[in-house]
Amino acid sequence: MNAVSHCPLPTGFKVDHYEVESVLGRPGTFGITYSAFPCGDKRRRVAIKELFPPAWVIRELPSQTVVAQGRREAVAFNNAVEMFRNEAKLLSRLSHPNIVRIFDYLETNGTGYLVMEFEYGYNLEAHLRMQTMRLNENELLNLLLPLLEGLEQAHRISCLHRDIKPANIYITRDHRPLLLDFGAAREMVVSRTTSLSAILTPGFAPPEQYTSSQRQGPFTDIYALGAVLHVAMTGAVPPEALRRVTSDSYVPLAVRLAGQEYSLSFLSAVDAALALPAAERPQSIAEWRKQLTEKVPERIIQHAIPDFSTTSFARAESVLRRAMPMAFDEDRPTPARPQKPSISFETKRVRGRDLRLAGGIFIAALFLVLLVLWLLV
Image 1 (cartoon, one colour):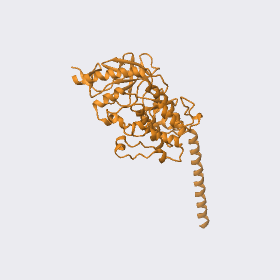
Image 2 (image 1 turned 60 degrees about the vertical axis):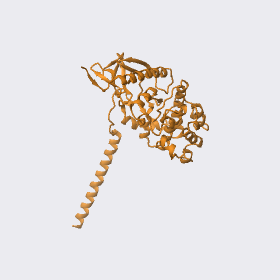
Image 3 (image 1 turned 120 degrees about the horizontal axis):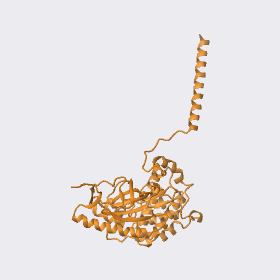
Image 4 (image 1 turned 45 degrees about the horizontal axis):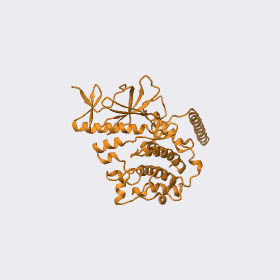
């Protein structure tokens, strides 16, 4: 009898015409994401998401075939594969520089695989964690507006994201914001295999995501983006939506940050996005964009793909390079531990000169003391 496992695919395993390199991040309740190469072409790295809900399936060894654990699990898993396939078809219709591109979809090895572009960089969560200065309005708009264009295109084909948060906003090596991890199939799988808290990200999910009886729409993603801006401006996640329903402790940003570096119209637009009743939020990306940019000079919003070279993203990049070298170095396919900052040759010369100067002063002082003692004797 073959052995079974929940382990990821091993390095070198071939998924159709792609060769697995390594696991990206941690395996989740929905699946596992790998870095991989087209067979025979290691110059072009891709990311592959494998549908692998461990509550329903196991992996037979040594074949690595994915099989359901029982009859009931097989029905649920087959539905998940169908939904994953439909989602892949939907996402493949999106072509926008600020939404991760889908290259291919495969059904092999007993499950489905989504092949996506691989980008070097880091997520917004990491950036905000390393940031010493909060992002100003100009920087936030340069980050947000390109994402809004991509999300608007997704909404036109009735594709909601449903899990926008800093961890799902990626900053590529050329400073391009990229929206990751659309997931209707993920939401369906997770909702049937684990608790509600695993599907939602508290603080970023609006009230309608806590129940199946309320309609979701573009205003659902707008709430999450408002929460992302709230974190970037205050360093704190807004209060969880369910708690706000019973006792709303949310302090409007138009009050909390009044008179600071943000315009009143911008703060009011973020507050509008975070309104609890869906009907009181902007109903479309176009409506919210108008509120956000109502009093913004044209020079700020003229670039679809912004240049972050003079922003805090560029200022923080040296720190991120030390912490996450793989995010920037194509020659390092696996993450490395953060390195201690090295001392430059110039720094060494300055320190050497300072040591020599201190030594000279010490010798002179010692000579002076000895001379005084000799005269007293």
